[in-house]
Image: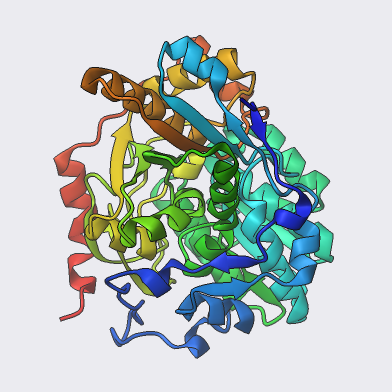
Length: 452
């Protein structure tokens, strides 16, 4: 039995997989907030280059990966598929556990899978500067690296709570040449508005998105890039699942359960969508998205049209949401502190093709520490959510008296998240409950946004 299943560079996929082609119910269109009519490519042109807009609306099953992007991917791809043999021993289980390890990338997570193509298409379009937001800093770090690779200026609005919690993420972005601002900032009207209401706000991904979009929309030489949620972002991440399928073929195994954390959707989609295709075609496989109990849009949110950002600059998106004005609790898994889920993941959940589960952060950190002791990799706080679900699945299999094959995405390492682990060991972390009253308040303002 091999511990690591490795692919040669020549085995790396040369196309991204677009699940829209196979969805039994196609996603509802994004709407213009003023007219409530489907948006056009022209509406998105101030923010994105045309190549990405075309990918955003494409229904083609496979989209070619440009050679320049493949060349950059080869810096770290293909990534290893690893049999978690030591975790299996620690859990005393006969289940087979595999993880796709995306922490081998230059930024330490899966995020460069889309940062590289987004920077490439912007460079091709003559863009001089890209503005973005970041939660825990994984996306900001990835885009900083990608912009450095293609010679583009990069500016990042980092959610304030993560800006303060994770100083080494900021330094990583600075090392790649990016400018980093704590969000909310005084640089934008959206930031000033938020600070006027609450000068001590921890910030949110939705608010950081508002700041980035505000700047990008006002400068013709600047474009905006998003690290999750949008169709083209999820498309780029499917290289993960395609590699994993090829690697599992070498083992003769096929997963019964596929698990990944979900903040906006890129991590989960990247691993699971090539397997969801199999499920649509009749294969028996469960795909489980895991979210924080303090930000449970999939398990407690409502499927509605809502803005992707706090200020209301984005189109209205059909998604499971807690409301765009909702500010999640200041948990260390900053990449999962987002009020909504991607349109594609939301539609798949609505159709019962994927599942969702919410887990408290103490259980997640307990799982992460167990994994680190067993496998030797300290996971990012976001990745701990997937590991906690793996442990739940192992216990469920034990109760049912069955042996299962489990695949999860170890989406990034936590080597620059040591402050989070220190808080856990010092007993400073607490669980955050989410009440029905919070949901009622959060959704009240978006009732008027629904199309008639």
